[in-house]
Image (cartoon, rainbow, N blue to C red; front, side, top):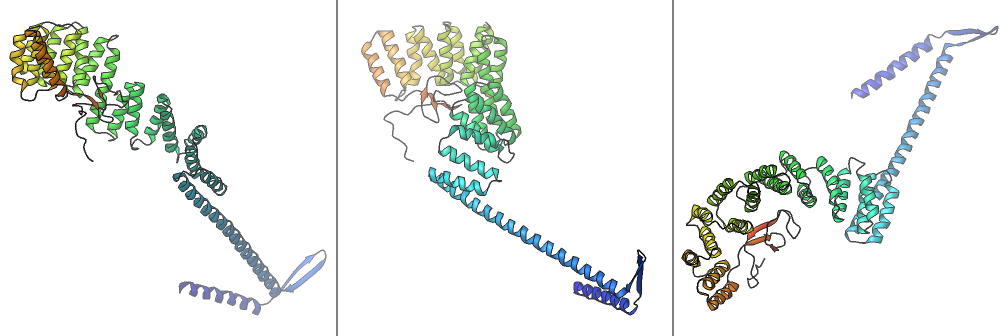
Length: 435
């Protein structure tokens, strides 16, 4: 309504001006080279209006033509984009269906329509190169991706995976770390980098990476403590011979983060023993056994005794008496008395742990006692035969592959980081679980 009112108002003003000009006509005169030119004011204003009108028409024609040309090119570009995206979708479907030739053909068609869309072109090229197993071309595509902000994450991830596949863990970590800086919460990235660090044994990087991951809430405190303790343990192993005092400080850090973990205790005892501190050694053994007697810790102590040829009965008895009622303390004493040929004491201590269904270790203890005390080979063989059918003793089992191994390591023999659990292996005749 307002626009209509303004339009009518403008028309009235123009008509008023025209009417006024026509009714008040005057003569316009001027001289050029002694010639005098005269004409009516109505003719002047009439020509002026005609010129204005022509300019208006020309301007309207120009803008109208420009709009049509622009619309034409925009429509053409839109159709090209539509075709390009269509070819991209078809190509990705062909990739998922492993139709190599079709994917390559569609990739070329897509590039002819999406020349300026570098992101989609690189993405499709990477998928096609993966499918065709063109390693060199795929690497070039990933290196091109890291030059563009929108695709740099994909580029770093692709390069990391390429080097992991080739077992080039050094370069895999370089690109993985760059990816962690720009996209730290990418699924499984932290775990992958920890695996790479374990492979390259760059334990200082594990300490640094875990601290950054905890600060950004990628891992919880438990995982942080676990991985930090392993890193300190591994560095302590490396420095054990060259810097024993520094090594001792590092293994103490490990035990603070993961207290009473027998593999850490074993290294701690070896370092203390190498420093010649007998009083600290005795104090530590008593403390560890009092706090957490277990089959695993007993194995650590037994291995330590045998490796260092410790035959001090009073010393070992003192350790066992810290938890004398505990089954593992009794087993430690039985081992001690068998080792020192005190058969009567071994027999009296084993009575409380035989039970109706003794384990393999107890059966083997009984075989040694029968043969050592009475030279009864027949009874010894009988106990050994019983041991074959008894429940198996605990071993370190990889929770991913179920492969057993004798000693704990941060990297299992199967090749997995921190995957070992101390548990009983499955017997061959044990029924399988139905999932």
